[in-house]
Length: 574
Image (cartoon, rainbow, N blue to C red; front, side, top):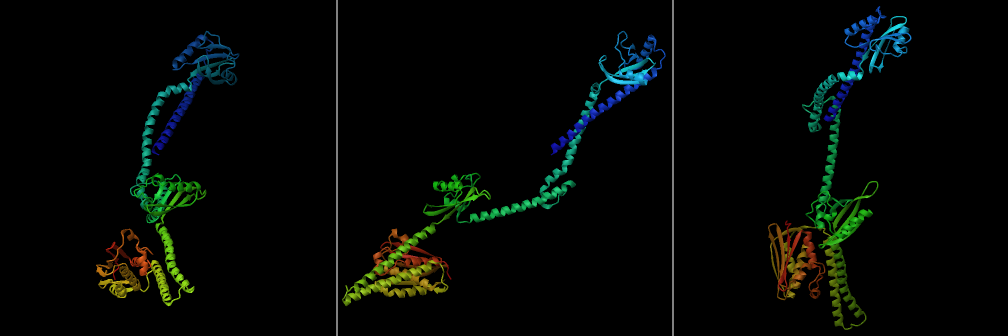
């Protein structure tokens, strides 16, 4: 702005100076011409009444006196009415053409005097002619050369140049000083703009009255811009907080396949935790899976939503591809990729299928036995009373086994729901352990198994039936899978704010390849032995779910043919 203002002032000054010089020359020239004409008129008026205009010698003498008395040359001519030149001070011995048609001559004969200014081909310059009538038959015409305006301008050009340079220096200095003075408040206001925007007042800065409305408008716009920026920051922070705390992966790309945003879960699920999001990074730098990249292309090019499942490192991941569309044209301008870990869902589906198959198998086996023996009795294939009692006893045992299986399934289903019973109360696990030992003592004696109980008072807020079920299944397994003459050790102790339940035996133990599956439903290492002892394969699964319901942890220590120890630790000591 300073340079432009300076140039404008200089341009105006230069144009004004040039115009002034031109006007000065024109005015000077007009004064010069007028002065020359007046002088010539005065001389003619003084000499027109001279008495000896007929004597050429006296005429020459008078003309010479006049010419010597002036500093410029003149030409005297006497012209008769018929246009004949009878005397000319410059062309004395020359024959001149008729001057009858000269404007000044004609006007002099008609009015007594006449004048005219024209270019003379004889003298090669502008000439001013003034004629007066000296007799009825003659006029006296006096002329002098007048310099043209160009010659006048050239004559005074050096003075004009010096004057122009002098004015230019003054204008340059004045324009520079004026520009700085005019822009000083603007510069100070610019330097103090932040203070003016924040406080509304600028201390120590003189602002033009014309700028008050501008500064007010700037403050208003600053307030609106700050509000808009705050809203954008709030939205950005909110969206960033949401996406960063999502367990699902979140990736946003534009139509050029450049990544605009990605959260931590997205990096982790893709397997590129160290990915650094920088401007213009392509999706190819993040994902190398050809199936996913093909889905990205299909979704953007065809502008459709797609879903794709992949399995990676033992996890099942589901990718949702949703095009980001323009508001009016509905063209895809980007793509939103949402990644969901559906491993638990897939595992639950597998478990449901296995559970259905196991339940069907477990229910079918005793039912088949019951139906088979019942048909044999109905068809009369078994007639003697001893055989009937035998097979009826077998039907009864299978029925009891079937009822136990159904009860265990129902109990496990209730526990899996994760809803703690309302009848929770402070119970003493010492009492539960002693009651369980007393309840299973007859079975242990029958199998020649020795029970040893070592417990202390340990109170926990839980459902008594659930805790009894947990303890019963642990001790019952220790008895069923033991050796004749073996031991089962029952322990309840406290360690700080923890309660530790431990049931160990000296039984058959569990081979290493089966240890990871013993807490699965219906899983039995030795199926023939479980069938003999009436096991349903749900005992340890029930134990696991009860422990998880009350934030407990299960630890298994076992070695084949040496025994097994199962420890359940509860950290919620009451």
